[in-house]
Length: 224
Length: 272
Ligand SMILES: Nc1ncnc2c1ncn2[C@@H]1O[C@H](COP(=O)(O)OP(=O)(O)OP(=O)(O)O)[C@@H](O)[C@H]1O
Ligand SMILES: [Mg+2]
Image (cartoon, rainbow over all chains, first blue to last red; front, side, top):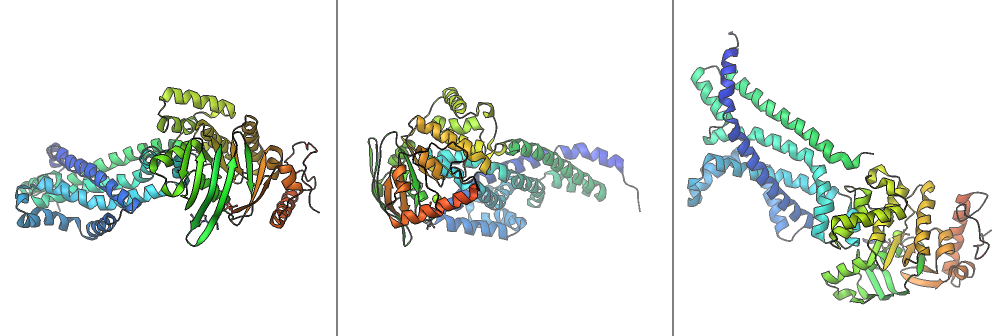
């Protein structure tokens, strides 16, 4: 038994904080790209576009059916052996790519469910006054689908922030990688990892708070 | 003037509309009645292409469509000339009362927002809901929602408003306010085609009542004649059942027009 070294934890905190931007950058970029891709996949699924629909199903099945870590290794270590132009790919890019593809598969399904969840009669009402499909999607369906999808999408974003820690297995010195290095120098593993855990926890709680505020704003139209 | 010619609609093997011919004059108020499943809703839905008819011609003003060959632009043009009032209101849940009415003007007619909103305000005044301009549908009663549904149709300035059982989803307490608004539109000679089971409304307001059965128009006439001297056996059967139902649901007083004074003419004889 030894006592917790609080002093070390306090020292470590500002050091780790310097790596937070990289973590958030990877998660942010991954989220934006995953959202765009997921919307595309969801629309293909909703409209059941011939051919593309089957491909989309295969894509979703693969990226939901295999571990994120396996996918990351596949992109970083595996693919460059087949595709020469990928040799310059760095760990950060590979991570963003992996997060994007992996999470877009999950998000596509929740976006699809949200679009389908908007009352069909509103679509008919929009058509009946002469709106085009694009107009009614943009002005009627998507705003309501957003509200339905926001809670699950925020959960995926939170998951994605935590998943960026896997980047350290690709040699990226982000929050987790930095902690690992610090711990290896000081041998104070518990202090190092509990500090980084608290840091992740704090970010997630902050996001959960933002999520509640966003949901209550989006819910304004539906209060009786 | 609006003209349907040989309109046919099938769902799979079943023919739901079996050659509908219909002429509607400007300012005419037509009520469509008939048993469940005879294609009344389908007829209305085909008239603004919520369902695509399988054959026939549709003429509205200068628009003349062979329905099998209708192109996208023509379908949009047709929809601008017809407005729809839905049984379940179908208001845009993410828009306020005002925005529900202004939406089509902004998006379809490309009016500037301020102009669209001021028109929407005028309409809210006319339907008696000015103070609800900023309320969302979820906070309104069924009757208020349906009046906004009608307001949205009024805003479209369509050649005809198609009503599909506008009062059937309403709690009884709200029916009268919606029928009242429809009567107001009728007085302003808004062309309307109304599917309803409200026989009192048909008798008081319609210029013509159409009885449909099995995807066809069985007979049509002014309400005074159709209700008192129906020619076809099916019409007689239907009227007997409906009127017996309405009499039963209205209780011993037996007033079939929900408390409105009976004008003594054209009155529908309650069947014994
Ligand atoms: N989308 C659809 N697919 C298949 N069949 C349909 C569809 N819509 C309607 N039908 C069928 O077409 C027939 C006519 O339906 P419609 O809704 O037009 O009748 P209706 O006269 O409006 O009846 P109600 O008084 O019950 O509203 C019914 O048998 C119905 O089951
Ligand atoms: Mg119907």
